[in-house]
Length: 127
Image (cartoon, rainbow, N blue to C red; front, side, top):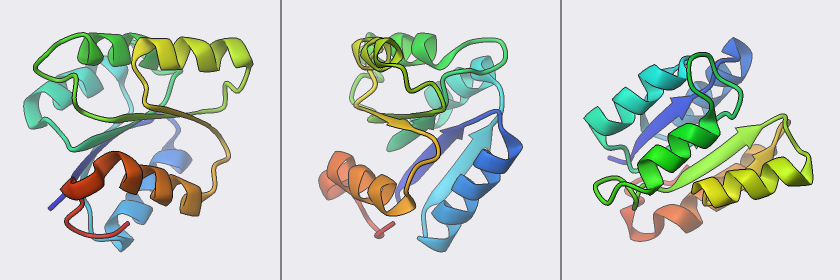
């Protein structure tokens, strides 16, 4: 089963993502804290990470960099989901290692399509 890690400090956004993952049959874990999210990513080595930018204790840009520039975790796809939609933030997100940078509010069908593209043959269940 495909494992998804959700790192999102907004309770409403996190619960929405959790509900989406559950409805589509994905196994998921979530946290609202950046440092905790980094620890969880290293512990469970998820198949994909849905990552907010503005987080308590450590921002999403730093989390992405720490994972993507470590050969042990560099192959984990990261989708940044954030309300920061300024072009400079998008460039920072992508250069930090995010595979996709999506602005909130996002369309769940587009998120689904992007996840499927990134997961490729790792998808065990459709989202």
